[in-house]
Length: 161
Image 1 (cartoon, rainbow, N blue to C red):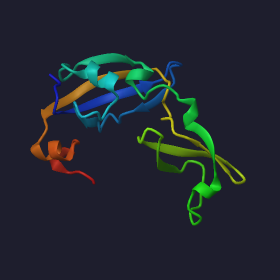
Image 2 (cartoon, rainbow, N blue to C red):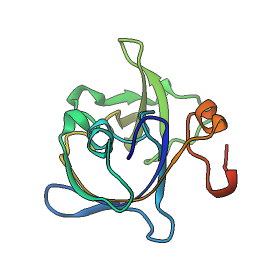
Image 3 (tube, rainbow, N blue to C red):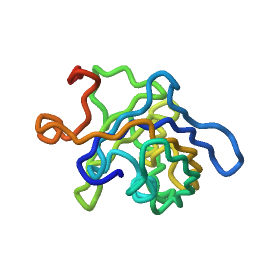
Image 4 (cartoon, helix red, strand yellow):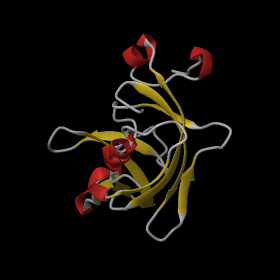
């Protein structure tokens, strides 16, 4: 049964409310995460708690329990002069900035119009209701090293940092 500090291997498929597939795990390489560490959206993590190997579940996650609501003020335009002169700004680039409330936010460059850079600090799935189809493939207790590092390591302890 899935509980805090377990390493869980999942096969999953994620769709939006229109039924469009957004993401899925590779059948031969299930997604591994450390349960209870906030590595998956809160609504999914709550729904997985207590499931056993072989269990399948359909989980609907609201924006509040997923990637949050879309915040219009996080989509804005800034002057090119706010960026270092030696950086070649391109759409798709990401950077971190501090919000007024001191939180760190990842912004993505959406487009460039002359000296104006259009940026968005919303997660691409903000405001979306998420629909997960999950199957629990494996559950094991995390090693002390995994708990210390705060994430699951691969088979045989192989991992990347």
